Image (cartoon, rainbow, N blue to C red; front, side):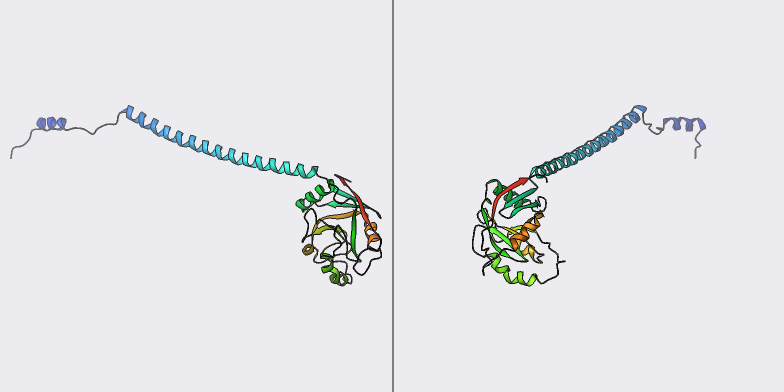
Length: 234
């Protein structure tokens, strides 16, 4: 077998192709592409993050503005009503926050003179006095036996005396009646829409409570609400 000379081997090795090299331009171009991709992803993330944050802040601003508007609207409403009766004045604090719809209705009726000249139709001692246009007992009749029963109970019950409310069964504009409790009533919320509390004139309420009545709990002498004055503060 013929031996290959060293010079021939050297020439053959030169003829073989060496490994291909990546040019500097290719490296720079690839690096720029990666940087651009990262920058684009980061910019997109910042954009959507800021947009989401602005949306949340705008939503909170709208909610806060609405809440502020509602609070200012409530604060502008009268918070007290003074009932000028033929026995004297009764001052009532209105529950604007807990009973807003009933208070709004009551205020509208007051401004329309709804209660001017309204009579106290029924008086149940140690229980409730009721003013309205109708001479029928209605809800009062249903309470009569309970009133006698509750008058014997301890006074440390859940619902206080001197609460102002109107009947749940009938509280439209024509049937809006006023009830003022003279003793704690355990099931008060089942009977009345409570929207206020007497803060001054409890003695007048008690004086009305002590008038003589007939067998149907109607006062023998007329007692009326002459007018109602609304006050924002007392």
